[in-house]
Image (tube, rainbow, N blue to C red; front, top):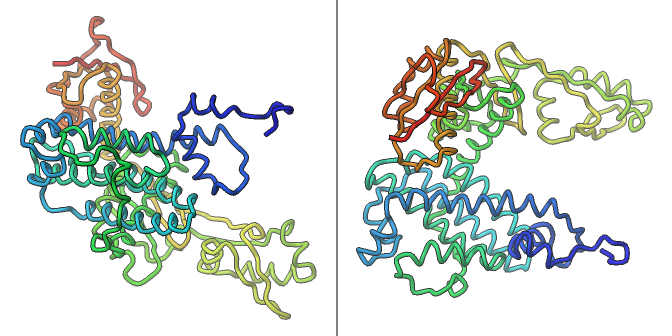
Amino acid sequence: MSTSKGNAVNPFDIVHKYGADPLRWYMLSTSNPWVPTRFDEDALVEVVRKFFDTLKNSYSFFTLYANIDNIAKRAHRESKTIEGFLEQFAGDPERIDNWVTSRFNSLVKRVTGRLDDYDLTPAARMITDFVIDDLSNWYIRLNRRRFWAPADDPSKMRAYLTLYRILCAAARLVAPYVPFLSEYLWQELIKPTGKSKELSVHMTGFPVCDESAVDDELEETMALAQKVVSIGRAARSRKNLKVRQPLAGILVNIPGIGKFEKMQPEMQAIRDELNIKKVEQLSSVSDVVSLSAKLNFDKAGPLLGSATKEVSAKIARWSDFDIMQMQADGRIEVELADGAISLTAEEIEIQRIERDGFAVESDGWITVALRTDIDGDLRDEGFAREMVNKIQNMRKTSGFEVTDRITVMVSTADPLAAALRRHHEFIRRETLADRIDLVETIPADNMGKNWNINGVKADIAVKKQ
């Protein structure tokens, strides 16, 4: 930067606008301090959106439901810490509780190793990935319903306890990087009962990996499930199929003996995240898609010279396995009469022809074939889920509390009206509605809102009981 050239950034303006912690995290997660780095304000904004907002939202999710159940006040009345209070009601850990605990302890081990070597940037990126991918987008997403359970349900209290421990330990883990945010989280999480001996997160010890809590096999299995979900979402996106629209299922091809069977404990999570009915094994990718490859003459011609024709003929005879190997590895060795030559994905054109009714996506060696046909039952369920989404949006914009009961009026026509009647109980249960009435028109004094739900117009009004 140069003040004379007018491209200097005033650090005090940046700190005032975004805060010292986001600036510090951006600088350290972009590159190690001794590496010259071009400052990018847009990248700083992205850091705030992805990491800071996600961590804060994870904390806010916990406090929202913990406050509904008066966890801190009840712990204070019993002269216990929040952790101690939750432990007395918590049931046995569920598989996903053990998984996130294992993931966090593995993270602590890897981060500690990096920091011991003064390698700050990879450690910050590891923490970012955990907070976004594992904590927020997987553990919290998959466990939302546990937090909705009534009273002191043991599974709910175990979910509270697991998330609470992760958040407290995460505050200590990020403290060297973001001293202000970590202190805020610590004070909010630890201090409510007044039973903590530590006055500050900076007076506590850095987290230590609990080796007994690390389960490598469980982490590997869940990673497979996360990968399948990611590929399935890509297939949905390419076909413009919203996640709220239920689909019949997916076929999954994972090379390796027992790999598919290994995912069996995570099948419900896959079904929930992709909103599908079944997960089946795909024995051969050729059952759902045909692959063909040809040489990209513009890219490869200058490299191959006189061998171009020979290589082109070999590539044209490739099997699906050869093509998938090249896709997974990013390059492949082609044997020629006078030796081997290495070709990259840029030098080879691959064509995929999907069977009707499927959207096929691959990542590395894993292939997912999404069934895209939607019958009447799936269509009606999609209408119902969209209706739930619209009512929940109206609850939020109306300023209702999470626990408020409501009544709903809907003015619409078939096929949406038929779907509403068919899935009436599901919609009512998901939106905390005591009544859902189908009416000819919404009375003017009820402040109805017009929606387009999968191509069908609907007027909806919500009212707090």
